[in-house]
Amino acid sequence: MSVPGVVIASSIQGSHVVEAHGFRSSLDLPTPLLMQADTSFDLASLTKIIATTSSLMELVSQKVIDIDNKVSQFLPGWHTNEKREITLRDLLSHRSGLAEWWPLYIAASNIDHAHEIIATTPLKYETGQGRHYSDLGFITLGKVITSITSQSLENSVTELSLSKVTLMSTQFASPKDINNVASTSRGDRIEKTMIETQTPYSVIERVEEFKGWRTQILSGEVNDGNAFHLFEGVSSHAGLFSTAQDLLLFGDSLLQRPELASFIEDGIDPDFHLGFRSWVDTCGLCTTRFYGHTGFTGVVFVFSPLHSSVLVVLTNRLHVDSEPLPTETIFAPYLRSFHSQLH
Image (cartoon, rainbow, N blue to C red; front, side, top):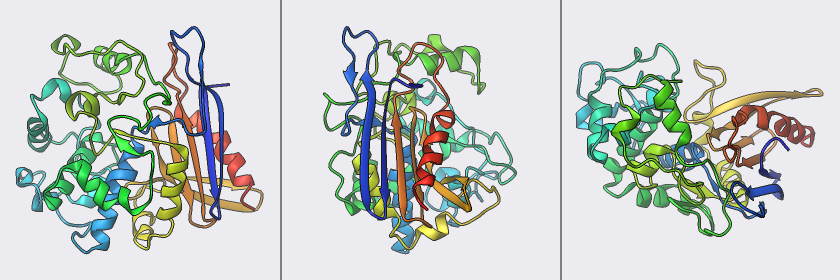
């Protein structure tokens, strides 16, 4: 097996199948723990669509916002010359010009300071001149949501997104069942290495400036550094835990939402949309575009409006001491196999 463990789940015309293989935790254990169909996973960037994009879809549906509203309409700190015209659409499509990533837990003294840094730091790229996948953009979208609702992000997401479906195992910061969760990496070693090597992003922060580096196997703790160290597990870019079954239920519900069409319509970037990305797969005479998202921990959620279907692939690819396999490499054969079942 290419990863320690995997849960594969599908919904085809509302019919659900969930399978588990391998181990949910094995490093430093005398006996590995088996993966189970109801094992919880750190969703990483799947949080972006399940929490943030979905909440924005609901606000659009309620006509509270328009996707072309300017961010500065909601966040006064964005009234600078270069950021004043940036829209929610720019953030959702990752074309705002914000930097891709920043260890805000080192740079900022608290959450408000982190948002101030994002608002006042010069753009890394010219707005609209290219797609640069940005955690900072989605952190900002979370701030927009809370400025509209005047509630905490957790309460806002629960009201606008999670409560729309009966999800029994989805929550921020920790899994519902701490005894049945897929472990991820050995502490913060991946982000620490990113800062040490300045790869793939150059930042001015140094590892010596931060004293909170985790070294234990992460099991039931949010893997993402900003989400864990700064936002205490509740962020609009990462932080949710969930199970395959909950994700299938979310996907079934998402396919019924009329506002989904405008969020997945074709745009400037052929494989990227408003909060969603997409993959095109051809199987026999059928060419289908699947929409969804990936998460750094090795998780993927996709759906096909054409086939009224959902595919969830949840792995613990980071639970290794060697170089982890890319999520895309892991996911590709599962997508092909799933597509073959749809016609």
